Length: 391
Ligand SMILES: [Mg+2]
Image 1 (cartoon, rainbow, N blue to C red):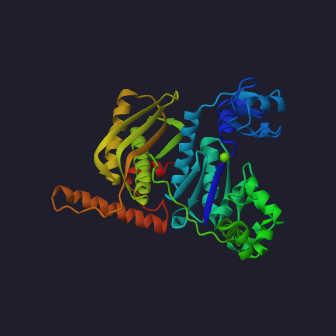
Image 2 (cartoon, protein in one colour):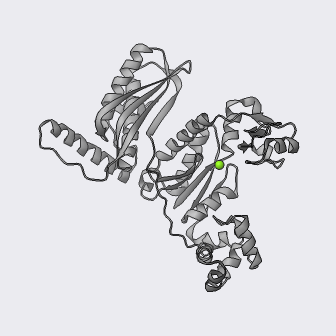
Image 3 (cartoon, rainbow, N blue to C red):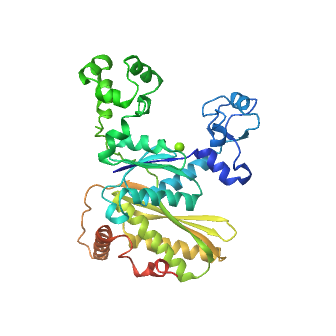
């Protein structure tokens, strides 16, 4: 099963979240009432007035004179998009982003670890809601293009699952323009052939359709019949793998903080190995009780994917932070950066100092395997026990 996850009115929702006085208001991001700029995003309240992205700001102001125009904060949206991506990454390494706020996820193979596709979809949606206070719409289907249609069907805050057996009955009544790649020109051409719903295309003679529309006709006929062999192609340019935890009470207990860091290292390195990459930079994110946030990075020397290496460096970074910023801690995060692909088996060295490394590699392999067979919470290091089993 493939998931398509799309954030609802992403930029506008971030502004409404960060500025509570904008909640329930028609918010327009980008453009201005008088200037020439265009609308980058509109809240659902603004959309009710017919405002949409790429519309001139002046036109938006005509449609809704009391709309609140806010300046876009692109680098902030990129940061939040990264947080969303990090949540996806907890569940599968196979993520194909379509934009900052939208991605396909293939979860086959991680189901033993996290539950079936529907469970994973719910958990992602809940994590986005609980941790980021934003909503996403989720579509789940055995075909990529159907998952995309499904996520859009019940927006905002939608959750639509289409099983293999329901594919045709789901697609049939939809208008042709719901098919991915059918824009206004395509829609026009299909209408001229008398094709208005996906059912009309499915029942049309495929050879005749191809004679009218060429390869594109073939392609559409296949889609209308639920045939789509396109796979989710993971983004190989992901810049980092990160995981963080916010505490319900501010923490000062050194042992517990170390357990948290160990847990974060276990989570990130398992994902690192699943994505067949190694990291050359480790960053600790540290937020004090007063919300002042610090990050501290260190290079690993040579790229590594071993949990023990990452725990050692991250723990040292934590010790340094605690010495310079001893106040209570609200959030800890670990992120692995400077990622390099690793698809060849690593040459085992015969030198003595490598024996410890080999033993650690074995531990990582066994933990990864058992976690995939038995579930993520079954086997872990004693050092993270206190955090994982806190009351
Ligand atoms: Mg979106």
